[in-house]
Image (cartoon, rainbow, N blue to C red):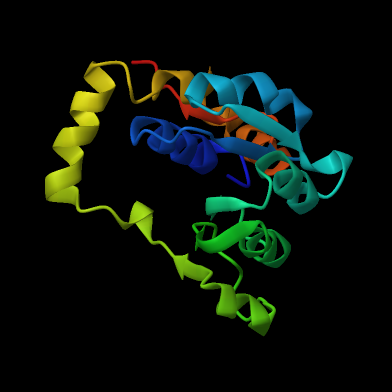
Length: 177
């Protein structure tokens, strides 16, 4: 999992619910190392301290089966593909800006690697929403843990800046009556 903001944490949680044996979380903010374990990550890589692709390849003895990119950067999308093992799939969840293109080594496709996109988690609302409710009620889906703090509407610009810096997962706006 590349990127451990709100979307990345949700993907980590989803992988844990699905039964993934090893979940490697990657972020440039070392402060997220403890948080990601709450959502089910088994390992954490601080991408500001070296090449995350090299670290993943070393940790896994050859790459991962699935890599999910939740940032929306060309570099991290390419890294998700590069850290795959033979036959692996990279899923790009982050919104890469319009007009930007990723570049992948053509030879890698001979190792049966795949890359795909996802929109809104590729969910099927009528089927998945009842399951999500059940997961939440049983304590498997960690929604409350994703809330870093509650703010007033006047603090929304500050909260948006915090999302950009990646220091917090998510803030929730509360309205007093």
